[in-house]
Length: 256
Image (cartoon, rainbow, N blue to C red):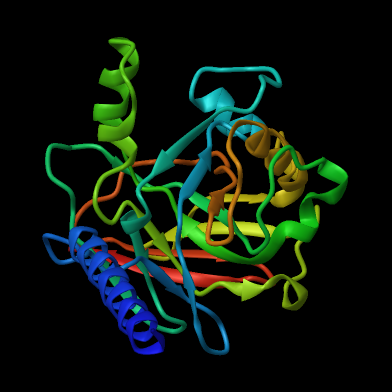
């Protein structure tokens, strides 16, 4: 009898292994999985990117140059995670000039990297969810974006194309000094095009996180492009863009 019980147990275990094997096989990828997007971290390591959120018209003067006034409620758009073009410290990234456009614009931004997720995060608690900061560029096919606006269509073709989010190394929040007087600057071929301070954000970083987390549950790996100051303009092949946020870092990209 004992031998029968052992045999039945062994048969049952083998059957279970067969089921697990079948389930594993049925759940395996049928094509090669794409590599995950990552951004280098200042001092070593990498930051895996889950999503990229962007805030529209979040500096007063930029809103004016885009034809808007007043403190409108914050609104958001997204870029795919693999739109990042990571550029290591001290290096110059190479961004291919994208197709379909004759009006590619630069938009320098402070990027907040989320390290702790959450939903309906209060502004008072928001900064505890920020792992670090980086300098980023929200590159924009302005002509395609403008056409989409006129037709009442989504902006993806103007904002969410390949390598549309160049970004420098992420620096831990504790190592950064980000405040109202923090300077944000973009130069093109050595001439200043954009400059402002973080204190001129219409919606602060904490307020952005509060509004954003009411609509989506934030997760570790999310990047938030917090908005660009005035001075956005066209760039072309051969132009060298140098972006800097004081106390955070810098980013250099040439268009090829």
